[in-house]
Amino acid sequence: MLIILLLVVFMIGTFFGFMFIKNTIAHWLVGGISFLLLAGSVAMLTMHIKDNWGMKEVTTSSTHQIYTAGDNSAPYGMMIKAEIGKNTDNYVLVYRNSEKAEKAEKADTNFKPNQKNIVEAVKKSATYKLVDDTKATVTTKTTRRVWSSDFYKLLFSVGGEQNELVKQQSVVSVPKDTWLVLTQDQVKKLSQEAPAMQKQMEAQLKADPQKAAQLAALQKSNPTEYAKMQVKQIKQLLGITE
Image 1 (cartoon, rainbow, N blue to C red):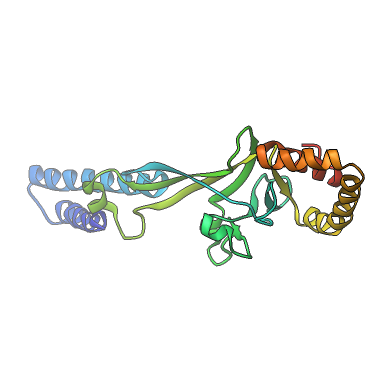
Image 2: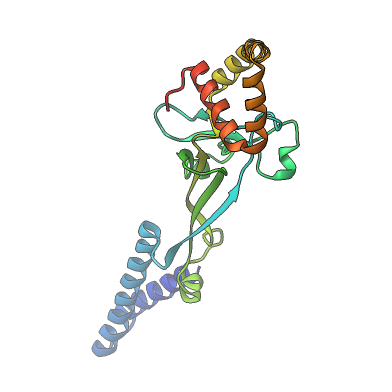
């Protein structure tokens, strides 16, 4: 950090000028200038420590599609949520991040705080919103602190400050009609109630072949509408009103 070296030089200059130079003009010239430079250096260092003077914030954004955390053969998508704390609107969210992962048995757990780095963990947050769309996506905005110029980097840098994380905010956009956003308790309830629900549906379709044919045709010709119907039924089963 060059600023520390400058502080030492200006302190020595101030001390030498006021204590050892006898000529009045030189005494005040050397001592006074060194003192002013010392005060200015202290002020700059204070502003850097307090307000990150000499640095600027740069924000980048990225978006990618996500895939269901549930059964891949289901006509609808599913995301599992777990709120961090109470009424924080900050979540750990479970879904698959790629089409290759979509075929895996286990989905990905996303945005789980890193307990080994609490300082960085508190700078990160994740939430979700229901949207009118057919695909689920996650958009992450990351703000990092970088040096304003090479001069400030030379003056203040001690290492580790470049690209320091300021904040990271992720928003998952979930299709409101064709996806389910469930808690672990709701997933458990669904797994318990689904077999009975399926048997009841099969019995109804067996008793009404025309309706069965219509549903089969709908599933083939318009998968989105079929998914909407499935999601609506499950929400009614689980008492979800959103």
